[in-house]
Image (cartoon, rainbow, N blue to C red; front, side, top):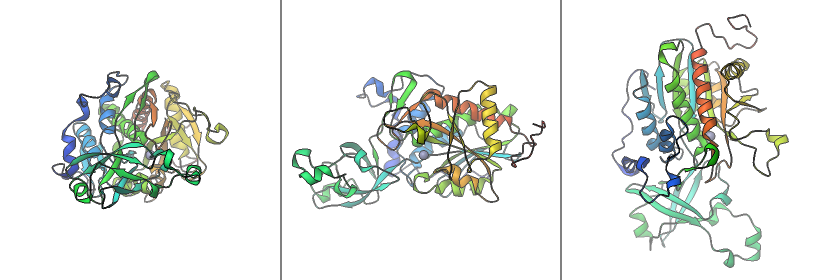
Length: 399
Ligand SMILES: [Zn+2]
């Protein structure tokens, strides 16, 4: 990161990024109305839709980062994009302590690895997929000339042998079909290395629930951006950074480099966690986490007790609903790398309950997003130069 100096954003002029000039805001005209955000239940709900409609498999995050930059530009004192593509907005960048709010912009996807003579495409996964979730899905290949509609499939059940029916499908038994009649026709639209996502789209459901691929972690990204907006500069004593990280799904890579660049004393990652309020999940193992019950404040060795207690106290004081969860190991998200950056960072994890994670139908509650943004903004405004997060040290008020 080059702090304080605006770097040129990666070009949106060519390739599949150009496609995003056609804004998803208006819908496609043919979309059923439930795909459009007609039921507004929180501020900047359109931003969530825009984030969800921008493809961002790990390593291919430019389209969503363009949206992040446009949202942050009027709000930030500094706005930088580092060499990996992390977008970093700062407010009061010279104050102490430095607080970093982080959410990852990337989503799981695929990358084209082979095109055969008949024009069928084969792909590797980006991030953690259950191949069962992929069978029969509508997909989009983000080619150089634009979005290429595709399906991912295998042979029909009637043609499966008895032993094939009993086996769990493997990724190598699946292929993408774009309707090409041969390799040459496929190559006119698709190159090896092009990223692939599930067909993108949002459904607004009852009880303020929303359903889309990529809620992990576009919902957390919305929270970080909205918290940055809500943290009133007139009352902010600390230095605040909103970071839209890249490549979380392939090893927390953007958080490692961006945290090093920002050098915060305090960091809060916002990511999704498993809602356990649907059938077949063992709450004895996974806790009791509900959609609509509020964001989840995590406790455990990865998380600084001072950050945790402040989040809980601020939620209580401001009547913001929250849920508690525990994790006994390093968290499998950006909070892991934030905590162990440089000489150590006092780290928190605020999580959005998500049903059906890493599938085409990830489901969250907009009420949880709204509450999470409010809590994080309060947390930012509560920090001052006297704040200490060294375990065992008293708060400035002696508590
Ligand atoms: Zn995530």
